[in-house]
Amino acid sequence: MKKRMGLIGARGYVGGELMRLLGAHSGLEPAVVSSRQLVGQKISEHFEYPSDTLIRDLGFEDVAELELDAWVLALPNGLAPAWVEAIRQHDKDAVILDLGADYRFDSTWTYGFTERFRDQISKAKLISNPGCYATAMQVAIWPILEFLDGPAHAFGVSGYSGAGTTPSDKNNPERLRDNLIPYALTGHIHEREVSTQMGHSVRFMPHVAEFFRGINITLSAPLKDGVEAADIWAAYERVWGAEPLIQVEKDRMPEVAQVAGAHHVGVGGVSVKDGHLVVVSVIDNLLKGAATQAMQNLNLALGFDEFNSVKL
Ligand SMILES: NC(=O)C1=CN([C@@H]2O[C@H](COP(=O)(O)OP(=O)(O)OC[C@H]3O[C@@H](n4cnc5c(N)ncnc54)[C@H](OP(=O)(O)O)[C@@H]3O)[C@@H](O)[C@H]2O)C=CC1
Ligand SMILES: CC(=O)N[C@@H](CCC(=O)OP(=O)(O)O)C(=O)O
Image (cartoon, rainbow, N blue to C red):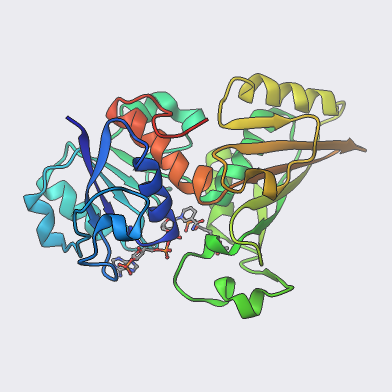
């Protein structure tokens, strides 16, 4: 029998990607799918998932009648805690994975950067999925921390799906046409997330562009005396060389179009001059930046193969 999960916030871009992944999963099914706007429609009418079950508009009071192995929250930031409280009151055994930022600084939750915290995630009940930009930055920084001699500065450009489905300037096609919009140039939450996780100061300058999906991070940082490009490449190969979802790109510059629709992060474009490093990291914000990493983490926490449903 398959394990059963609930998805709250299914209508969003990330919810849609997660449903598509679940369609290819051998042991986990979305038993309860919730969206206020899609309530009453068949799951198969809206998602790439074959099921006649109706989409619900779940309330906190409905949680008590449901026995599920896992809950996934794909909601705007700030909305997860009320759901977590309702679920935990009724069932402390279910795995809860939050895709938003509400628990990324809470030490009672396990931070879901899969490639770094596999052991902890496989024992966890409460998992906070990393931010999209934050995942791309950490892939570039984590292996080379020992070489850095001061704050890293990350220039980020995201496709507009990163801004979710709620209309705003950041996903308004008129505003974005032939344009690049800088925003949150100091104090973006992913700046704090990466600085906290890496134990190293990171300055992050996000921008949003006209393309739909994908993120480019161009990271620049001072290096300790004597560090050369070969040291950086060797560290990436050592830490990420065996990772199916992280590709060290030695022969080409990583570009957004190479990862749009793909599960992996690409890191490369290493350039070192006068004690200064520049490196590029690209990710599909909706996949390894959200749904794919959530699937890896759920698989580990529920005892499945980490890559079940993630076609490599
Ligand atoms: N987009 C991205 O690239 C990434 C997103 N994330 C995170 O994943 C989560 C989902 O993101 P995304 O799919 O882009 O978001 P969307 O804005 O596209 O979707 C949000 C979902 O939440 C539901 N929702 C909105 N308001 C409420 C409410 N008051 N009560 C209940 N449900 C509500 C909406 O459905 P309905 O209105 O039908 O109920 C919708 O399904 C967010 O936490 C986001 O920060 C993480 C990494 C990357
Ligand atoms: C273009 C755009 O707006 N991107 C979003 C990406 C953040 C995100 O979705 O992640 P969390 O909210 O889960 O941290 C932003 O900068 O807020």
